Structures are given as structure tokens and as C-alpha cells.
Length: 545
Image (cartoon, rainbow, N blue to C red; front, side):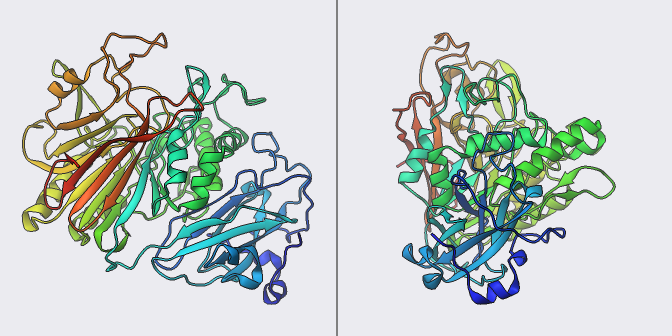
């Protein structure tokens, strides 16, 4: 199959390909011949606005090879893209709405980020509209993907979306995690996906990468740029995650495992050069593999640390959803830092301003870890979570309380990742007085596959103990079992279910549906609806429906 191009683009030159950021001068894009399909990682879309969306792909005939199957490839390659209003329209330039060329480079591991509105050959899209897209190179093409733009702010539409976090590739039990939640989501698509981090795991633990990946034994943790790129390749070449990425646009914010376990990004610049290099390698690989609107990572002034910022504190999806998604890793310091912070000053101010001014029916805060103070039991004072020793917790809950005092219909919900456990709770304004002055409802999402319970080591504390220690908790989405019943893996059997959370924000209710499976290590495992809870507009707390 020949790859056609519009005459005006040919005249403009292939090297004028579009990307989210301006690249340094690169060699002219060259013709290339591939022996096998270079689109082994598929395609994706993300960060939609009312009139645009980011389209992504990455050339990698062998995603986990040390050269990604690109040995001998020219340093710059021209990749063609199309956007259309129908599936069939995306199969030909003649029937597409827009089409153009993007130059991918070895420097960026042959990844493409196309902003449809600003790309040469592109243009503005219509709000609240479904579009179809495709990439092509050397006669090879991606499957036709589906994406959609945000509805207009006053559009009276239900905002339906999935929330995902913590998707380890493997388990200690048998190796591969099959991600039945992703299989369910690909078969039951939503408007968009909100991913709250731990998209990959950088570590060498058997729960994060299976030994069967050639040349990537479980003893190897990611350190070099090649390590991180190969790890991303291993995760993204799976069929069910590719189908979700290809058919549903995403908003994404990283947690720690995309970088280094428990990393405090705001202090990386003060660490050894080895730690800085590892952070920089991780951030570059993250940007190369996600459909993000953020500019290519750049060096932070006065340091050698890379940063990549994108504004996600003002996402509006029609009349009924304002979505605030702060980055809680790039600017975080340790709690005992001279000026401890979760958000950084500028982002903190944006979050607080958005709480004060959000005008949709529901204001949802997508956070990588729960704001709920979650005690192990009534007799165990340890508190899990990352908010508890930072000023941001009080600032955020105070801002919500002030807004609710002036506007009784203000309806905030938190959607949280990190703890590998699904539960619903009320958010107390003061974490030391959890029994009173509740200001919001929180839904913690189950991990897609990562093992373990909601903090507390092996999770040998039963649900009654957890409930007694946490008066704000409303519901736990887990497998009931004796706290001392062991399956031989070193973990108690009272494990949370694995999967994801489906949400729908409407004029009267905020609906949630926990889609989970009892295990992820069997290829036949199926995710189904486990528990449905809803919040009434203006109220706090969740009830079954």
C-alpha cells in the first residue's frame, strides 16, 4: 500500500511535521523500509480540548529489544497521519478531514505527538464530537483509532469516564497479569479515561515485570533511558491495553513508579547526579510513550533536572463535570523538608482557585493517592497516605468547606489511586477529627492488577477492624476472608478486587461502578460489576443503587 500525501504538504516538506513542541533542528526525514510492522505499540490519543486532541504513536518493530528493532534506521523518519469524521474516512487522504506528516526522531525514540489543531495539514475540531485517526509509514498502518473532543461547557451531557491506576505487568503468583479490567473497558468504552499513575513499574520485583521477557530479567530495575523505554514497550505491546488506548482518549498524571519508588520530584535536583540521571531518563521515556499535551521535557532553570508540565487543573467536560488533576510527583518534597509541598506553590494556587470557581454540577479531584486519613485499625495509629503531613490537605479541605458554606449545591468528589484498594469514604475537614465536619466524598479505585492491600503491609487486618478504625469509611470493595487465612504467597487472602472504576456525572447524581475480577493471573479471569454507589448532588456520602 502506498502512502499518499496532499500536494501542499509535499510542497511544504516532510520535515515540517507537527508535534506538540518545537524540536531542535533535525536531519530531513528520510525514506525508510521496514521488514515488519513498526506499529507494534499501536496508537493513542489524549488531553482532548473542545477543538483539538493529541494523537500519539511510536515506531518500534521490536519494543523490548535493546534497539527496539530500529537498528540502521535513519535519525529522522516521516510518518503520515489522518483524522476523519468516519471510520472509513480515516482509511484514505481523499476522505479524511485532515492529514499531514510528522517527523519522528531517534532522539525521541521515534515517538509522535500530533496536536490536530496546530499541526501542518491539521485544523480545529468540533466540540463534543467523535473522530477517527490513523498513522502510516512505508505501507504499514495502525488500526483506525477513535477519539473525541470535550463537549462545550454548557452541553447538557452525562460525563462518563473510567478511572484506572496501578497496573503491574506481573504477579508473584504465576507471572503475567492479564488485566481483565482493560478487557472489560475495551468492550464497554467510555467518553475518556483518567489514569492516576503507576502506568508502569520501574522496579525489579517479580510483581512488576515477568522473567519471560528476553534480556530483561526480574533482577534488573530501570536506570538507563534504554531500560525505561524497554519497560514501556513491554507494557504497551499488550493487546487489551492497546485497544483501550486506541479507542478512548485519556487524561493522565504519573505517580512514583514511572520514575523511582517513592520519589520526591521536588528534591531530585538536590540528589546525586545518578539519581538526577535516572529521573531524567524516566521522564523522557514517559513523555515518549504517552499522548500528552505537555511539551518535550526541558531542563529546570538552575538545575540539571528535567521537568514536563501540562495544565490539568481546569478540565471541563460539559455542564456536569469540572475535573481537577494535580501532578503530585514532579514538585513533591519530603514532609520534613524546610518548605514541604505536594503540589508546588504555583500548582497549589491553581487547584485552590479552581475549587473556588468551578461551576459544573460536580467538581471531581483526581488525585494519585487518597486524601482520606486511613488508619490500619482502631488500635493501630499508623495512617496510610501522602496527604497527612502536608499543608495542602488542610488548604484543600478548607477551600471546599468555604465553597460549600457559600454554595450548598457545591458537590465535590475525590477519585484516588495508589493504595490498590477500592473503597468509598467521607472526607473529614480535619484529619484528626474524622467523625465530624465532612466536606466531600472519596472513591478510591482498585488497582488494575498490582498486588497488595490498601496500605498496611500484608493486609492481615480484617474489614471489621478497618471499619472500626475509620469512621469515615462507607464501603470496602474486597474479598471477605479471615484475616489470618494465607494463600501461601505471603499475603492474606482478604485481598481487594482488581479492576477499575466507571463514573458518570449527571445533573442529579454522581454514579460509580466498581468493575473488578477476583484475580488477574488467570487468562480466563473476567471483570464484572462488583458494587455500584452514587452520591446525590449537594450531599456527602455514597449509597448503593
